[in-house]
Image 1 (cartoon, one colour):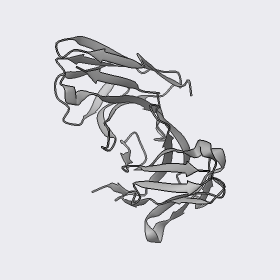
Image 2 (cartoon, rainbow over the protein chains, first blue to last red):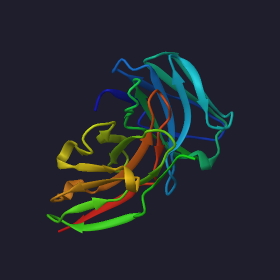
Image 3 (cartoon, one colour):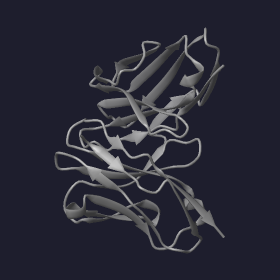
Image 4 (cartoon, each protein chain N blue to C red):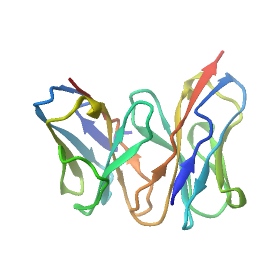
Length: 111
Length: 113
């Protein structure tokens, strides 16, 4: 369970704030993912990074800006969010076997 | 297009009863199949996975799943449910390489005494 960590676990921010979510994986994986999970909606893939390179951007608004400085760390920078962006943001990592391991998530509330 | 269907949004079972959660998939390539479980406010935990070989796979917490290619199904089963099994269960399908998984919408399991 401690293979993928996410901080903070909870975040409340105003629409004009800038904040960042952090994800760290201790599994030696080469791919990392951001997902958004909203109430009553399916899991939405946001971004995928392979070997630090972004390989997928699932039409995510520019107010979400990912950063992957190395294979172990992934950030999601947030600015001028909307209340509908309130959700559980999940990070995951995988090796080439495709089994994704998830972190506990950051519960984001936008006021 | 790849898709995963979990036909049951919510299932309620009595503690000690058997459980089967359904999953059907549509995938162009040879699928890799997964079941994840999510407790409230938590991340997803891998229960089991199928890549190839024996079509009946065993997972953690006493769960098993059977891959049936002819039915495009990967149903999750447990012979005797415990109250701690109450959670949301997600089926997912993927392929070789770091391709994103496609997730179903989930089935919420409630367990009553």
